[in-house]
Amino acid sequence: MRAASPDAMAPSRPGSTRTAPPELPDRFWTQPRMRTYLLFDATGIVYLLVGLVALRVAWALAAGPEAWQRLMQSFANPLYVAFHLLALVGSIFVGVRFFRLFPKAQPAHIGPAKPPPRPVLHAMLYAAWCGVTLALLVVLGGLWP
Amino acid sequence: MKALLLRLEPVIWLLFGAGIMVGTLLLPGYLLTVALGAPLGLLPARALSFERAHEIFSNPLGRLVLLGIIALPLWKGAHHTRALCVDLLGHRSDALIGSLLYAVALAGSIAGILAVLSIG
Amino acid sequence: MSELRKRTFVVTRFDPDVDHAPKTQSYEVACRPDWKVLDALNFIKDEIDGTLSHRWSCRMAVCGSCGMNVDGEPKLTCKTSLADYGDRVEIAPLANFPIIRDLVIDMDGFMEKLESVKPWILVAKQKAAEEGTNRQSPEQLAAFKQFSMCINCMLCYAACPVVSQEPHFLGPAAIALGHRYNMDSRDEGAAQRNRVFRGEGNVFACSYANECSEVCPKHVDPAAAVNQAKLNAVIDWATSFVVRREG
Image (tube, rainbow over all chains, first blue to last red; front, side, top):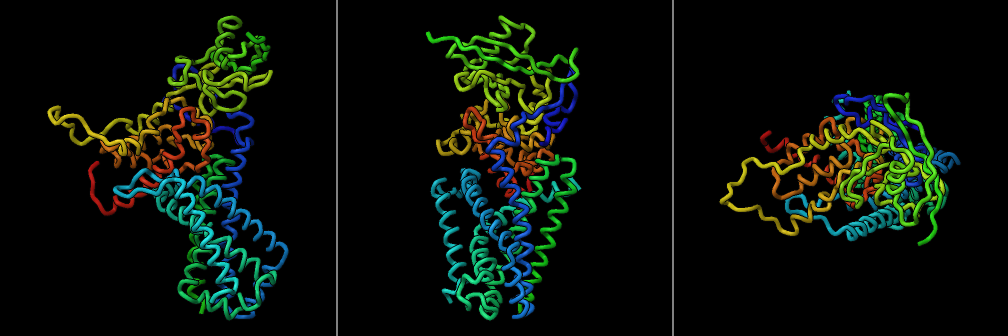
């Protein structure tokens, strides 16, 4: 996989002896944590596509009932189903990793404001996730209104 | 182009932050219903019939939620795809790739605004 | 005393006057059970091959000198027990750094990045001695204390994917140190440092791989510092449109 840039950590002026370029160990990109991180970044591709596909929802609603029917049939195609399932798994994977890393990324204070303790913030994120998902399931699932 | 991207980093990061936070909050609910549930017939017929779907998403809050589902994932997606490209392809093509990806996100966001506003 | 265990150490060698590129050399060493990797390296240099060059000093994980890649992972060799390794141990210089000789890497790039964040208390006007010392509450200290524990061992740079690809990126330790001062209640230099953070050194290049925090031997959690610094830098950028400030 990708080697280190030959200029990685290079000083602005060369030293008095010739140096060998920076190296990366063979397992740099393939070790388990790095694999997870690369997968996390790769979900970016899925998110790009999900957003663009969601444009079809708005366009179909603007166009009328026949367009909406066609959209529903289109989304029932196995390729779309597989894609949206992948997006579902991807968004959960992203949420889990992001919620784990988010609390420690909050500074101890911004002016007088302080964030909640990290475990509390972690729980709040999951509560919000469940709440929003539940609300969408209830409304879009037909339960209410 | 590199200099322009550097100046825009704070804005891009804010959009990315909103994208990963709100986008991830919204996606499972949307995917389970609109993207999968209704097309596969797993929901009651009236849930996302055109009439009801139209009523929900022509409501101002509904338009906002739909816009969130369209636009916010684009910024998370562009930012992380760019990071992946730096990891796999190095920094020399970063300015070009980053600019292209954010242009796609911007275009998609504008298209999204126009699209949700056009829901009659 | 338990038995000695024979291990093979595959060590990177590079003499700039002789070698075109780094190569490896194997040494067989009968290791004592309580040895760290550094003990084996010192044995090799003292008893087998005096030409081997490596940095080390305190032997107790506070000086930051002995960082190397052991079996592909950045480690402090004085703190890394051979008991956790097998019969064959690979020792390479710290990843992502130019190599001066054998296991010794060029630190100058790191020093430049460190200096660029002005890692000292910056005040507009020095207090007169008669006014007494600065006062700081435990809570104020807690806002940055963790980030002050860095020993500049550079393991985080060896682990960071962005450091490997973006030569201008300030990197975990430098950003963490700049953030340490930004969060210090005695300091008034946050605006200056945030400008550095938003410049070529670009804190936003960090993609939150979190590898830096995984390898840090002093539990500084530089990833937390860098990502806190991003938020502070954005707030600084946003308020710069509203508030005129010096420098």
